[in-house]
Image 1 (cartoon, helix red, strand yellow):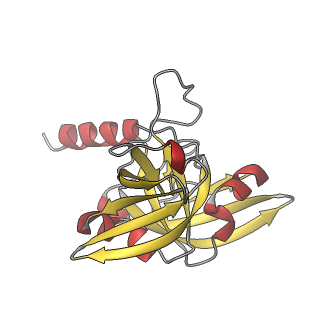
Image 2: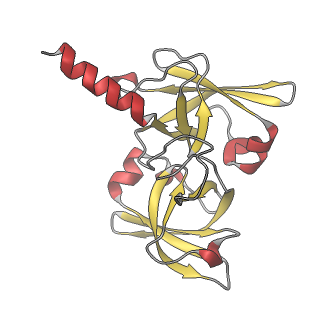
Length: 200
């Protein structure tokens, strides 16, 4: 379980294909604190640490075929910036919202607007997959817990403050950038219950 509060945007230093899997090696400031089998969210995707190198401050995770197909991790290149968050502990404040680390689908950035020091990003997603946003509801974009504004049938906006812009990989986004979305878990349960009720 995660909160959507990104710790840093770290750099990909190596990518290695292994049949249909992809081994991703990251360089980050807390790599020397990680242990094998620990969970870390990468652009909102929960992956397990399989190797660490404390001297080089790197660690490696493995993404399987399904993960690569359903997220933007298959688009990574060497030097790509990836949002990282370690899993929550019971003594942490839930500053964001409940994020599972299970990406629902990807979306495309279709507009970037600067607004007196902040930024508005508009994302478009495939509505046929059954996901929705609600005005002022929560959504995870590349693992960042954000509040939805201008919620439409298949688009929504988020507002990014300078701190988040610099800390996360939002500063690399441009029109056409593909991002990972995880929709609010409470909203997904309500939507499923209502769909079952309406089908009776």
